[in-house]
Structure formats: C-alpha cells, structure tokens
Length: 95
Image (cartoon, rainbow, N blue to C red; front, side, top):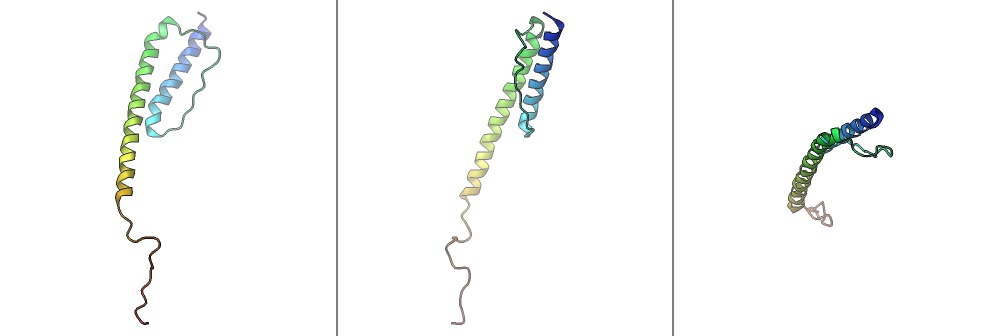
C-alpha cells in the first residue's frame, strides 16, 4: 500500500477519534469520509478498533447525558406554576 494511503488513513482515524472524544462535551465536530481512502491497511486495524471503542464510549456518555437531561426537564415541568397565566395580577381592595 502506498505511504500516501497509510497517512490518509492515519489522518482519518485521528479526526474520528478527536470527534468522538469531543462529542460528550458539546464540541461541534463534523466528519466527512475522504472519498479516496481505499481499504484500511492491516497495520491500522488495531488503531481503528481503539477508535471504535472511543466512539462507543462517547455514544454511551451521550445517551447517559440525554437520559439525565430528560430527567431534569421532567422535574422542572413537574413544578406547578406560582399562578395561572389567566389569573388576575392585581386585587382591587378600595372598590
């Protein structure tokens, strides 16, 4: 495999790993696969597996955060309003 392809795969894996590590912290990232990567070099299979593990951890973390956020929103919605929006705000005590 040409050195150029190997280096392209290394850059792609590094970008994927960075995106996965940043995702749970709200860092916006996007990744578009290069169109000319070709097959994954045998020497990078282990690294690709590690990147996949990082992505799976990020997915679990994001899922946990989603559940936690949903719980917080449910708790906020469960608190009754101090007064209904349609209720009068002022009381006429002189008339």
